Image (cartoon, rainbow, N blue to C red; front, side, top):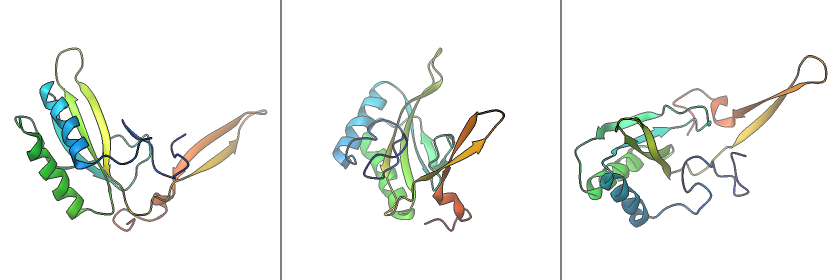
Length: 144
C-alpha cells in the first residue's frame, strides 16, 4: 500500500512516521556523511513509486562534511518549491554498492492527492491492476 490512513505518500525511510524535524533530518544527514555517502536534494510533483528519478535541486554534495550545509539546501528547496515532494537521498559509491543507501521525504505539498487503482480485465479470469497518481491528471508545472 502506498498511502497510509492519513493519506500520505509512503516512500522511502521513515514514511510511516510523523514528518521529520530539522534536527532529525540533520541526524540522518550526519549518518550519511559519516558513511561517506554523497547527499542530494531532489523534488517531484509525481511521487509514483516507479518514478525513481526525481529532479535534482542544485548539485549533489560530494565533499560536504557538515550536515548544516545540506540542511540549508533542503530549506532553500522548501522555500523555492513549497508545493512539491522533496526528498534527501544518500548515494553510496563504494564498490559493490553503487546505489542509493538512504532516501526519505522532507517536504510534502499541503494537499496530497493520492492514487487511484485501475483494474483491467485480461485473458480468462485474470485481472491486472495499475496505480495512477491523481497528481498526473494535470500537466507538469500545474500540479501544485
